[in-house]
Each structure stands twice: as C-alpha cells, then as structure tokens.
Image 1 (spheres, rainbow, N blue to C red):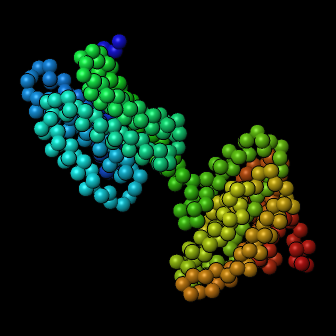
Image 2: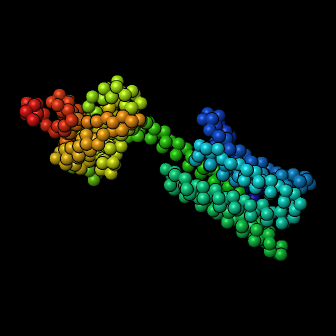
Length: 382
C-alpha cells in the first residue's frame, strides 16, 4: 500500500518546484497565464500543508476550512490560467468569484463535518471535469501529453466523486479506501502539474518555430521555411527518384503599384497574390514568399509539363481577375520561371537558381508569361 506521508511530501515538493518554475517563466515572458498556473501549484501545496497541520494543532478553521478553500482555488486558477493562455480577450471572472464565494459561505457552517468534505469534493470534481474540457478544445502539438492531461483531469474528477460516495456510506470500514482516494488525489494533481508545463512549452516552441519559418505578411513560408520544409519533403522516401519542380514568380511592375497607390495597397496586393497561390497549391506544393514581391512553389513528384500548366493557370487567374482595394481597380500580372529535375540529382537551391534565371527571361522578353526553357532567341520571337 502507498505510504501516505511519503506521497504527501513528494507531492508538496514537486508542486512547489513546478510553481516556482512557472513564476520564473512569468518573470521572463510577462504572460499572466504562467503566473496563474504557478499560483495553482503553490495553492495546492499550501492546501496540503494546512491539511497536514491537523496532526499537530487543533485549529479546524485553519486545517479544514482554509485548507478546503485552497483546494477549490487550485483548479479554479488552472481554469483561469488555461483561458488566459488560449484567449487574448478579458475573461469574465464573476462566475469564478461566485463559485469561490458560494463554496466559502456554504462551507462555513459545515466544514467540521463530512458534509463539508462532500461539498468540496463535488465542487472540485466539477472543476476538474471542466478543465479537461478546456484542454480537449485547445490545439496542442503534443497530442500524447494532451490526452494524458485530459485523462488526469477526468480521473481526478472521478476520484473526487468516488470520495463523495465513500463519505456518504454510514460505515467506518472505508477508512483505508479514503486513504487510497487521498493518495490518488495527490498523485493525479502532481502528475497534472508535471504534464502541464511540457504541454504548454511544446506549443510555445512550435509557435516560435512557425513564426521563424512564416512570412507574416503573406502567411506563406518565408525563405528559411521554404528550404526547411522543402528538404523535409524531398527527404521523404516516397519522393525518392521522383520528378520535382519549382515555380518562381514575380509581380510585374510592382514598384509602380507602391509609387502610385501607396505601400498599404502594395502590401494588400502581396496578400492577394499569396491567397491565389494558397487556393491553387495548398494541397500539392510548398509555397513561400522568398523576397519582396517574389514567390516560390516547390512541387514534389511533379513533371516539368505539369508544373508549367500549374504556373500558367496561376498566371491566368491573376491577370484575368483585377485586384480591388479601397476603391482602386488594379490589374496585376506575374512572370514565372519553372525548373525541374529528378529528386536527389540537384539541390533545392540549384533548382531555385535555375527557375530564377527563367523568371528573368520571362521578364526580359515581355512579362506576364511562364518560361520553362532557356532559349532567349526563341522566346523573343513569341
């Protein structure tokens, strides 16, 4: 059987350490959610300490009533902290205050009786079930840890309801069962505290990685992200020895758009071009904004002729559908170069360089066209 004092000591120490860790993160990031989650861990540790004082002092108001309030406060802080992490808008804290006030007032008259423990157990169970729901609807990269935390919260709620059942039984033979329930309560709370930081920081790391690889204006990959994602795709065994193509395109006379209509219009023109690229290539290629008005699309397992058809389709969509912004009707066009090779024979950088040379030919020989070969004289005749 579990040695309860050992479990209590272990849980207390870990919750203090994790709480202090969250405080240090808040001190660095100034993000309120980490402060609240740190407070939740410290609050639970304080509740454990106050409950343990029952063995040394006869002060039920402190060891039962105040300890119970802290037990309720801990999952409440978790819920508020998770909301702050997920949302930027202000959370309406009135229902939270009402739950805490209701618990405090109702408990005031019954905290020395088993009815008080039953009340707290039911409230805590409901809060952990709700916390599990919040985790479920949040997007996390670490799916295994997310499911583990949901399990811990649901199990914690279930344990609290089981404790209510035991307390309602009119027999004294459930003392050992209540000790197991208490140990389970401590273990589940500590496991949740251990999983939560990993879950949040894996998401933060993923977000930072996404920011580092994403062009904020177009919401396509930036140059760094294009090469990273491209290498990942081409290293996939399914793409070995397959034909790979790159389309590189540039907005024709883009400087004129900025000079005539202003940079805000120019920025929105880039967004509009990016949206056209997303709609056509979202499921079949890796799209990026690699320069000011320059875009690239990597097409794994795509022949040169098919890549040219894609490029022509994109060019026609852009030239035949005017861009509108703030009452301005602006005709945009793009020039494109396309290159192709067998995966593994040349690097992405070399493919991009070849496509860039063909883009230059497209611009030099009239613009608003797609070039897939290098015969300049032949291009000039078209």
